[in-house]
Image 1 (cartoon, rainbow, N blue to C red):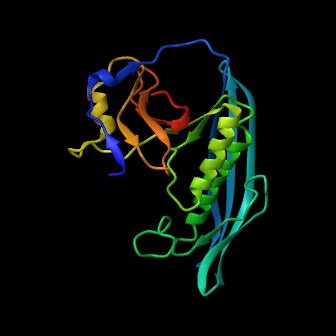
Image 2 (tube, rainbow, N blue to C red):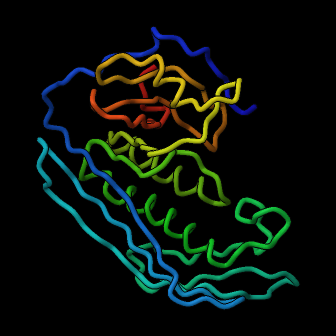
Image 3 (tube, rainbow, N blue to C red):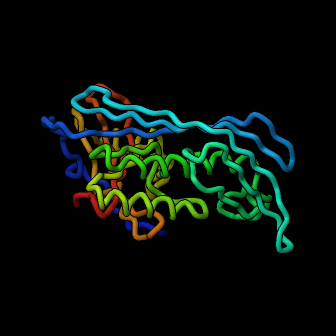
Length: 241
């Protein structure tokens, strides 16, 4: 309901053509592992990483990692999860989360304390992207450009602001998608039945009309022999029509 949808048509497939370019492209990813957990404490290791390529050669890379401690705290007659990040290069602030935050909880349950580590890792990936906008021409994030949890949009907005200043294009690549057609079929399977036998991108498919998802959404196959169709997003203010 939050998106404008378009009919799937063969003419919306566009061929990807090779071009010579010396632009730099950076890829960002991260992971987290829980080391210790009780009902009110979670100790996790979070690692984020970027690598920059130019002319198909890696020219720079860096790994940042930190332990984080999450514990429950009572204040103003309500419970929250506070965080302690030991390496401030990962994230300069210590975010705090409402234990009843419905963007993090499942069903009617309170927020699982383990979920906080995943959220901090996502924030750290976005913060890392912001810090390298002056090093690269294009940034590819792991996942979509949709803000889905409380305060995530603040990290996106900071990234977008810096990217515009540095003329760095922000994109996101999703290895899988749960999008369905109106008949309930898998969207990627539907595209695979119509696709040309070459590298391609497909657009338009849906149009986002909300501030928490400022993206132009494409689908693409990056090799003619590949069986994988990726969802690819570009920050809307920087995207071609």
